[in-house]
Amino acid sequence: MIRKLLKGAKGYELQSIFTVVLVLCETALEVVLPIFMSNILNVMQLYAMDPTGKGLTSAITVYDFCGGTHTLLTYGVGTIVLGIKDILLNTVYSYGILMVISALCSLTFGGLAGWLCAVAGAGFSKNMRGMLFTKIQSFSFANVDKFSTASLVTRSTTDVNNAQNSFMMIIRTVIRAPAMLIFSTVMAFMTEPKMAWIFFAAIPALGLVMFLISTRVHPLFKAMLKKYDKMNADVQEDLVAIRVVKAFVREDYEEQKYRESTEAVRKAQLKAERLMIFMNPLTSCIMYGTIVGLLIIGGKDIAVGTMQGGTLTAMMNYCTQILSSVMMICFIAVQLVLSRASIDRIYEVLETESDIRDGEQSDKTVDSGSIEFCDVDFSYSSNADNLTLEHINLSVKAGETVGIIGGTGDGKSSLVQLIPRFYDVFNGCVKVDGTDVREYSVYNLREGVSMVLQKNVLFSGTIRENLLWGNKDATQEEIEAACRAACAHDFIMSFPGGYDTDLGQGGVNVSGGQKQRLCIARALLKKPKIMILDDSTSAVDTATDAQIRKGLKELSADMTTIIIAQRLSSVQDCDKIVILDDGKINAVGTHEQLLASNSIYQEIYRSQQKGTADADGDIHTEGGEN
Image (cartoon, rainbow, N blue to C red; front, side, top):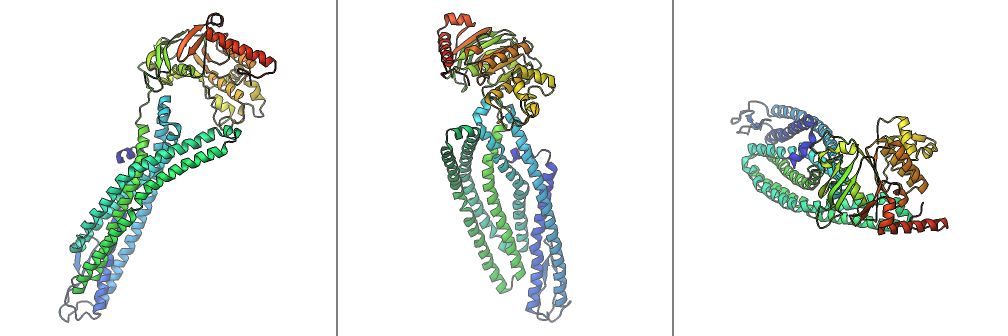
């Protein structure tokens, strides 16, 4: 996990390394403070016992900041080398000044470490989000379908935040806690080896508690994050479809559904936290038990005169530092367990290979726009028993206009999405200009194909900014020509801002038909060799539909055009019409040929003719216009 995390620290290595160094310096200075305090207390205890020093017959031993010992003076019977008051004052001043300097340096190092850690952590999260976003951009539709949009959003936000916290914890707290544990243990053994052995009973007990809780908590946190995905999916769905929700007065239903999602998250959190609740009580019991043991042993030694009070105080401080470090390691372990689930989810995305990869002929471009389907089978689930398209054989010459009709679910959109390789075929191949689309680079292939999807998508920004998606270097004349061909120029100019009108998020201030025409104009600006219109004139009237088709021919006569439509009027002038039925090609021919020989086409024609006749009588029927 740490190896994976460090990949995101690229560009912030120096900040991370200096954070570790400063944390080690801060910890080392904290560890020497109990020694300085011990020296002061030992001398004060000596002075309290005999202010004159005449009754003392032993040496006064103090410890320096390197762990060494020094005898300040030796007393003979009734003999004193230096006045005890002077010793006290010198000791308090010397070690007091050292304590202040050490504390200030420790504070400085800690502050700098915190600042550098924050810089490295923010850079880490930026890198991780950038890596995720770049990876997601390379995904095929199948990859996105696998993870779901809501899950990818959660992984790019909540999971990255958890990973950032883990990274900051690793370069600071994870270094500090073990360092404090090691340094304090060494100093405890140097100060009073006999008492230090008690830590070897406490540390394994704390380690066992940490291990048992962390191993049980991880799967619970992983399940909790899946609940987060479901909750985010509900929010996303509600916001995208907010107009439908309000139109059907389903706010109460959506609120109830969201409450159920949040309740599921709450229960998952509670289930995971239930185990963590035992962490603090168990570790506190072990810590206070160790302190009691030190007091019992130290009290006896002080009573018999084999230990000084300052030494016991130092050992108590080291006990607190050691066991606090172990408790911190336990806490870190639990946090890393939570983060591990998030990190695994992040790297599941980063390590997923896109189903769509560049072919060997990476320099080849689409030159003419001919298309050929050679015995194509396709399945969204890559399952031969669940084919969406079956045995598709179809040839489209460069510059032809081909219409595709069929019922809902017959595979019309699936068929055309194979051309720019949004998905790959299950069997067979799709050729463009005589070359298998899998041999092209994805960029060059899609540069030669423009596709207007069923769902019209516009982005926040002006009309001009949205149109320039088709060609970022397009001139005003080219923009207007594309918009005139798509019957969009007149309504654009009716806005006060013209082409600089702000569309708002998703184009909320234009109608469905206007969205479709803007999307068609955007696709035309790309000047593609192949244009695919996937039911993209469904929201415009028949007259506008006819004008758009006429504009397409005039703007680019040599462009291969594929039109998916529900209305026969949209495709009846095509060079050929393909009828799809249950994922198979039922017939191919012109309007006249199919009308004379194909029963499916005849049935569609009669139903739409009837709808037109009824519409003339002011009756709205299926197939009527908005």
